[in-house]
Amino acid sequence: MMEKNSSAVTEFILQGFAEYPKLQNILFLIFLIIYLWILLGNLGMVVLIRYSPQLETPMYFFLQHFSLMDACIASTVAPKMLLNFMAKRKTITYGGCIVQFFLFCIFTDVEAFLLAIMAIDRYVAIRKPLSYTVIMSRSFCLWLLCGAYAGGVLSSLIHTCASLRLSYCGRNSLNHFFCDLAALMALACSDTSFNQLLLFTFGILVEGLNTVTIAVSYGFIIIAVVKMPSSGGRLKTFSTCASHLTTFALFHGTILFMYFRPKSRFFMLTDKKISVFYTLIIPMLNPLIYSLRNADVKGAFKRLLRKTISPH
Image (cartoon, rainbow, N blue to C red; front, side, top):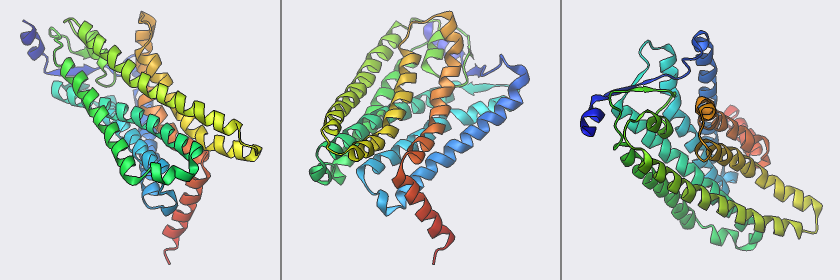
């Protein structure tokens, strides 16, 4: 019976923001501008780091991949959402829904791991500056990066395979603008306790591991900064960490609030708004956070711009 019910659903209707029928055109324009800015800002950051010799350090190596993940997260969600604003049938195939969730989960988890790795990089740079280039060697950075991608793929595979067990009894109207696991579980007519257990377990592992890593790293960083004799040195050190801490607070704070809070009718109605924040708003803000508060990035951008305008 479960297989029959599951196979009966060949597509999902993405309700999106159907509760605002008179604002569809305005919302389309707003989200289109946000998406284009995400692509411009994050892919611009990738190109800037790639072609700026002064940014060839481990910190910017990881930031380059972090920016790429931001662009990928938005690109997994935004195109279909924008298309559905204009479409009469706001649908996504069952297979397309599963692929969308699989990719979204990969990119989100990789980004979470990268935030932890960037905290480790800052710890080594501040606590062991003389050994920094030896410890954070090219090969070690590549191993850390591969670990982040492997962790993201493994987590996504587990959640995606578990979601394939869900049946929907012919129901196919998702109250969301993309195929989020919470929305799929809310729609399912089969038992979702296993999926909820996986979500909670892996959420605790991923969020717990990353949060503890960042907290411990910055605990040692704070101790090192407090011991610095120069107030100017302390301010400069803190400024290099401010962007990373701001991004960490926005990203993990939103994820924790979204997936690790008591459920209620009120919260279910606000899930879509929260999802907009971590799928589109945060990726839009991150390039600004890392460029406006970073003298190296601003300097590299000016040099690259001058080189582009006056190649000779």
